[in-house]
Length: 383
Image (tube, rainbow, N blue to C red; front, top):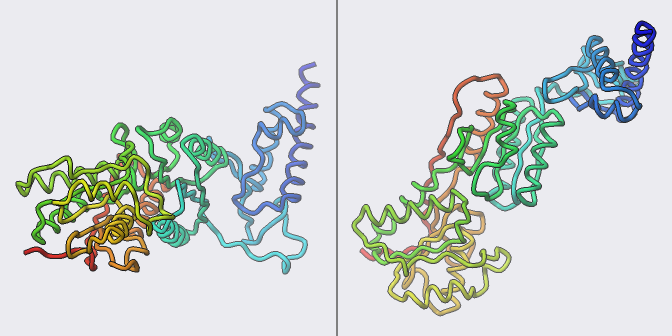
């Protein structure tokens, strides 16, 4: 009886293997595209997972697919370098373009699209291409969506992931799971202190410290600070800490009435209008001669608000930002700001990720990208 069952299973998995080939042909899958998993095949054809596993093993032995532990099964690269249908040469070679050989797919996960993140995306795509890989871009809506996105990418057999995380207190559960699974993963523009994981981010602390020191060097002593709420975002926290430490190191008292964290995030679509929160902050602190802003959007909003209040910038009030977004150079008073090197950030992240893809066993690495000050017209020297 047992022999009969084995014979039927053998016949069945051969049929399933043939049906997988039909799926590959019908979906016109290309080399390195994911093939349906054991579970998907079992549900699709009403067979056991063992039968679907044997079917995929048969295709792997024939060189039509390849399997990666914990990642899935993928269509193999044809020997002659051309796209195939079901592992066989395409019927019309001239109608199907040759496929560029590649070593995998790299996912870049971003929480939003802005001038800053767009520059990271462009630089990352160019760098990923140098390694013969394709870049997959994912935009996440919130923390839950980020978790789901990471899970689906891992199940789909992604080669590696570069993650710009949503603002959160601690590292997400899914990131920890991927770390345990040893899936190549690099965090950018954030750092999680509670877990050791590959990370590339700008030195926000030193950038803010140097900008505050720059204002002090220009003769300012009453220097205010305004920002969106920190909300457990390490970059905002480190910029604030850099400002505080620069004042302390130069023996300037920290006056907390000079510090303002917004109750509502700056509206980036209305930064050219008079902002009530920034107006109140300026009115309550007429002794301030300079304001350090946590990012360029807040800085630009503060400049427009001061101008609406008939406060000349920089003659009466100097204002600086952080990030050097494209708009910063084109407002009525071009903004002096901290520039973040997005190309170097993206290049370092991709290089580190590809090192992990190459099975590097080094301990987790943290790379800090240095910033620089861009001087424009929004600061007046009082010396």
